[in-house]
Length: 178
Length: 264
Image 1 (tube, rainbow over the protein chains, first blue to last red):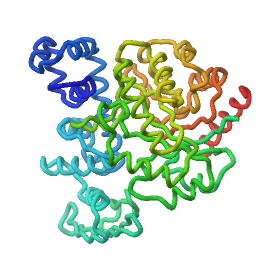
Image 2 (image 1 turned 180 degrees about the horizontal axis):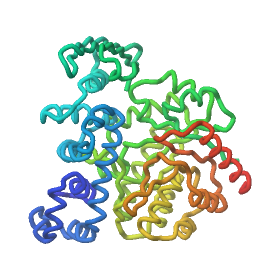
Image 3 (image 1 turned 30 degrees about the vertical axis):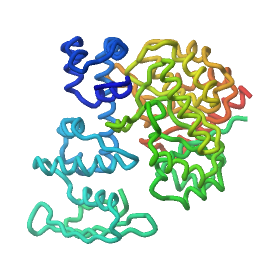
Image 4 (image 1 turned 30 degrees about the horizontal axis):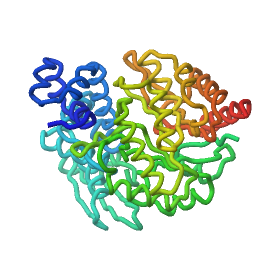
């Protein structure tokens, strides 16, 4: 039950199924959500193409932030990156000022759970940034049994640092917080 | 005299710390200092006039402001003692969703009350003058008054100024086909206190505010039209990505100062 335009617009922008329902029949949509006269007039006044564009823009802006936080994962996903991200992003809307970090960590989880390419090391760095641990030591097996990596992270006066050691030289990230 | 400056971003930190004469003021995004960085903030406040800019207070959402975001925002203001603070004429969240970015509010009397109440509350709690920024949106919402009329009334009811984003005005004008100078001339000139400007992007026949491009000639022309029209006090280049060599930013800042000099 919607009581104001902002909440209704917010739901339309975050839920593609609601936008599809509105596009297929505005009257059914109004009846289903029991919209009052004022909210009915509001949804009928919406330009649905503009609404779709605004909704896509919200996902694009999130993607551009996540691209900066998970550059290696996005590079590994290649041409599929945008598709995978938009699939994921309509189901989860992170809250608060750390939402970009949360988004990147959740997107990493999403890729992992669907066996998509995913860089565990950069994802671990973001998890450390989100958490409150002062120190972390992690050992990773890379793409072959004799390639390994060691990731050491620590927090000092609110700033996170990390060092990365690997015997697969070309693939290591820079040694600073993402 | 109009101050020219930049939005503070970590990739520019070293250059900003070297105190180049082109940078006369800085705009700080409050959210970037919610989790720390107080020493850096203190250094910046000791060396530059600052403005604190909010992204996530969602002044256009009905109901109360998010107490946690508000608490953090006030802390940043107290630590930095800015000349003024700013937020957007937009909503970014509701009780159910955080949309993460700026969305338009319809120019209605009811939204005017919501925005003006939130704006006054923010300004009172921070004990600082507040200015509100126009946003860019692919979704154009019509209401009970025109957008300039809505902005003029809002500034009057909330006792605040306008942060006119020249790029947002230009992009909206292109995407929704109206004349930006005609729009500008419907705004009360005295309310325009500060400007934002950054290059726009173009893709798929639309204009976008990706904040990663150099300022284009048509934007410089619109900036001149604004400075000719209104007594602007500060202008900020709002670059978020695709950071150019310092020389390019220096050139833009110097050009901005030259233009400002002509109109003052």
